[in-house]
Length: 198
Image (cartoon, rainbow, N blue to C red; front, top):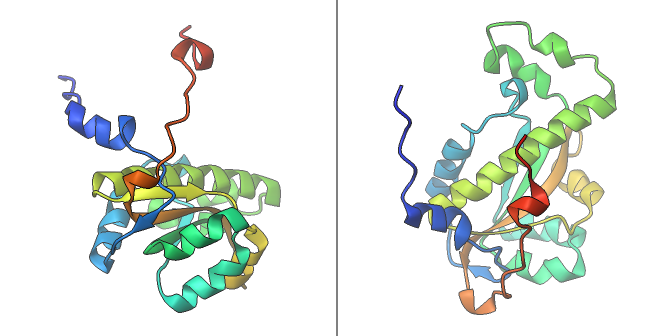
């Protein structure tokens, strides 16, 4: 089977080399774009195709007012100014969807009845992966992102997930970034510092 061609360099630049974490994000993001975003990110792999991430697209003034008290001082203003903030959560009862998502075997039995620590580990890992897919899908659709973890998870959970098995993981501001507000790009580790081939 022939190997697929690599994506064009301009596409790789948009997704990785030139993409930045934005602190000042404005513009508009409509419902169709949010649906297109989800329809891309949903295809990224997760353990047993569990897809544990759950997404809340916080856009209305009322929803922003519920989110505001949970934000750290350094993240509050920029988050409230962004057109959309995505709460990426993970469902600790993700296994209930496995009969649909992984139908060729009884994958639900692999997780149902597991201790809280295991469910948290699998849910958090999968939703973190899906949060990364969200960032790449957003960049592919021409949006800029500002992911962050500077918030009170318990307050977000109480405001948006009360009475459910969903817990918050990360927040991602979405919209169109102001390049004039970017900090210089921080260094990255070299291959030899971060990786090896065995």
